[in-house]
Image 1 (cartoon, rainbow, N blue to C red):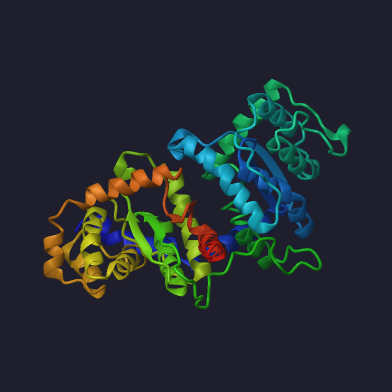
Image 2 (cartoon, rainbow, N blue to C red; image 1 turned 90 degrees about the horizontal axis):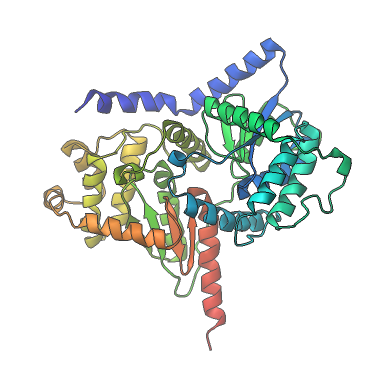
Length: 442
C-alpha cells in the first residue's frame, strides 16, 4: 500500500467536508468586511456557448433579487485539454440547452448549427463594448437570443440602441485575453460561470448553490425567499408503468458524478420498474485523454456540494485510477451473472468515493465485493478474465454513437442525455416513452 493510498482518504475527508466549505465561506466574508469591499459577483460569458446564452437571459432577474455588484467578462472557449471531444460538446450543448430551457420555462431553441463567425464576432464586439454591469445585464440576454435565433440584425427589437458600443479589435483582444487569464488564475476553464468569493458556480444548473449562499449572507432584496431554479426532486413514490423501457447507464468507476448519481438512477429504476443496464467504460485518463488539474479540482468540489444536497455520502475518497478501476470493472460481469450488479456497483462507488477503501488491494476489493454478495473465491477467479475490456470498449463506442462522450450518461428509448444533474430528464423520458407506448396501443 502506497503512502498516497494511506493519506488520500484522510486528506480528502477534510478537503471535501461541508465544515471546511462553510469555514472558507465565512473567512471570505470576514476578509470582505475588513476590506469594506462590495459583494462582487464575477460572470464569465462565452459568446458561442448556449449555456451562457441561458445565463445571460436571467442576469436581470438575479440582480433584481440580490444586493450584489456584477462584473462581466467575455471569455473564449475552453482549451482543448478541457474539451477533448469539442465537436460532440458543441453539438450536444445546443440540444441540452434547449432541453434545459424547456424544463425551466426559458426560451432557447437549437438552430441546428452554430451562429456564423461573422455573427459571433459582432456579438463579441457589442458585448465587450457594453461592459457596464447594468447595461450588460439588460442587453446581453436579448442579444444572445437574437444570435441563437440566427437573426441577421443582432440588435433587432432591443431597446436602447444608443447603449450599444462596438469595441475595437484591439479592445476585444485585450479584454478577452485578460478575462481568460483571470478565469484560469481563479481556477476554471468554462464559460457561463459565476465566481463569488472563492467559489465557482456553473450556469443555471448551479445557480441555486449561489443563491442559497447569498441568502445565507442576507443579501436578498425584500420579498425574495425562493430560488430561481431549485434542483428537481427525485421520484419519491412508486409509479406503475406498463412495460417500461430500459435505462442504459453509462458510467466510470473513476467519475465522482457517476458515484453520486448511481444510487439515484437505481432508485428510479426500482420506482418505475425500469431495468437499469450497466454500461461501464474506462475513465478518460485511462483512454489517453487529458484531464487538467483545474477540471479535476472543480469537479470534485462541485460533486461534494451536489452530494450534500442529495444526502449522498461523498468525500473520503481513494482515487481508483488505474489498477483499482480495472479490478473493479473485471468483477461487474460476475456480479451481474449472480444478480448482484447493482449492489456491487453501489458498494464499489461508496467504497472508493465515500469510505476511502483501496480497491487496488485484495483487502479493499474483497470488502467491497463481499458486502455486495459476491463470493471472494469466485471473484478472484473473475479477476483473471479480461473480457470486460472488450465490453467497456463496446460501451464507449455505443455512447459515442449517441453523440455523447462523458459519464454519467443515460439512454431511454431513443433519447440520450449526459450528466448527474439530468436525472429529471431521464425520468421525463422514461415516463414520456411509456405514455407514448400506451397511446399507440390498439
